Length: 302
View 1 (cartoon, helix red, strand yellow):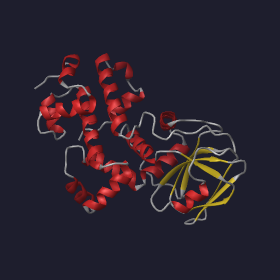
View 2 (cartoon, rainbow, N blue to C red):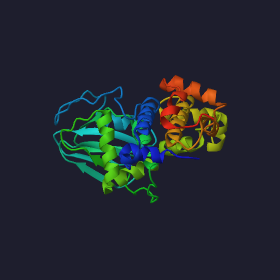
View 3 (cartoon, rainbow, N blue to C red):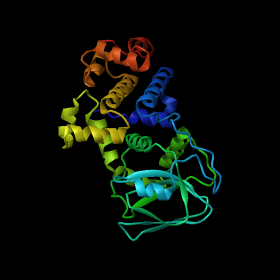
View 4 (cartoon, rainbow, N blue to C red):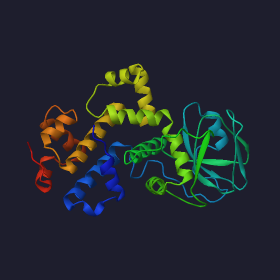
């Protein structure tokens, strides 16, 4: 099955000089589709990050202590802003300790069991789903490390003091860390990859973009349909059906941008009943019929 790695790398700027203006137009469309169907990966999320000074309470729902008492299971990602004192953390599962300087702000990925020994911090708004999806799409552009996650129950990424980033800027910052490939990013990414959310997203991307029924996907994943629906809702933030529909459309558009097959072949490859079904789906999600792009791409219609 063709992956979206090539198109994604092109979006990051690799080989951009070799892409014609028509293909650049298609890539812009595809990026727009992803912004709609992937929980707004590249645009403003519903909860904006408040401007926070050191020790000042942000527009946040929880303190870190409150968050620790509420979280139940699964790998978690949080964005925290430390107060005026050193924040010292421990973990119930391991004899591990972590101390963060006053005013520290950044991302923390961890397994449940976090304990606050001293200090206080605020939990800032963050879409975990977007970050897991972003990591998956980053990994589509290359082969991720296969080394197991570190033995520590957490990994951190320091944003720097006083940084105020809304969702798109935070994602751009994370992308820049991925391109640099530093040790802190690698440790953080390994924790994300070891989570069930990431594994499920990878499974859906590989297995669920051809119009398969949810019952078949659940059987392949090894769980009941009802449990699979719950897992998908947790990982995607919505129903699997609508998410997979958008993913399939985006991947079909990326295939169009490569210009190696006809509309009919692309429709059949991605599980559409016909080229007319494919055209209808594109019009509904993007507002442009694939046939209107044929002339500028040189793509055969049959």
